[in-house]
Length: 439
Ligand code: 5AD
Image (tube, rainbow, N blue to C red; front, top):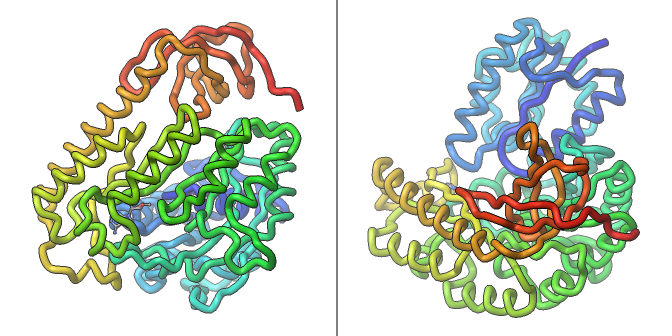
């Protein structure tokens, strides 16, 4: 039996797509094996959102070839799409395939095996108008599964390479989404996370009045679905209707990831973001008034070209004011072909490091502060994995990590947990009762 191994970098969309590709190989008789097992085929699903994604991708290609020098090494994902020549020139790469036309990947791999030279099949993504199905029927983690519902972006923020990699907006057929959610729930996945490159613009290109709120309303009723979570949604895409459905549906997690990028209006403007800090603050007020216990997490970038020390400090101040429960901090990385890469005032690496450390420290403080509010409360925790011999860990609906004693619980249970203490980055609790939601 032939074997295939995957390594996935970057976002939830990539994780979903790797799962879809793995299932494609499995249907053709391949066995999916761990990366260092010396597989016949290696698929490296790359990320290029920053230069770190590029670097990691290159390291993995070398690692794959070392694990089995006779293997076929396939590189796909955003780095392959935007820099096919650069990727194709890396020693050991047999096939570069972009983000379109992967439905016949297995055939391409089997053809490439006989070629003896690097094959490159990267389409012009700008011309792709259909959502390409790479359906999944399971996921690596038993409790949580990602479901991709949307592709592409048309925002072209000045720092971002993703619209060039992912192409125009496309939306997945809502019935396909619902069927996939149903399949995953029937397999025992309790929590579904809807993902997309620009998730908040779901509905674009579909007949009818579909938008993200309508999709949530459509899939949340799947019997046995305990939790529905959204990945990143841009502030300008969060409608009152979306907030209302999250507030009123018990299965919708009280958690929104809303990328802020900067807390300074002038920097936001130069980033090409379509809101300012007062809009953002107003949105959070409205969301928090509607959704009790809402956790808001965000992406924040430091060292955007021209960001002065003052502007950075305004960003820190605004982030603190917004009371996020978790931050993803990114150091600005110039991406070839994007406008900001040519902006004057590029911030030196050492200064970016310094700002990143300060922002990360603030993130920890805010996380601790948010988590502390839950000491003494009883929260529903989805038991996700073993923490140590005596404990499991899992998340609350508002994305607090909780360590709890195993007792008679199993992975996939929903436990009522009395929160006793807060530690660095997580909570500890004791079991209150064990229960499941009625279907
Ligand atoms: N440099 C650093 N971070 C970036 N992001 C997007 N482009 C860049 C870049 N050029 C970050 C943004 C986005 C997240 C997914 O990646 O914060 O929200």
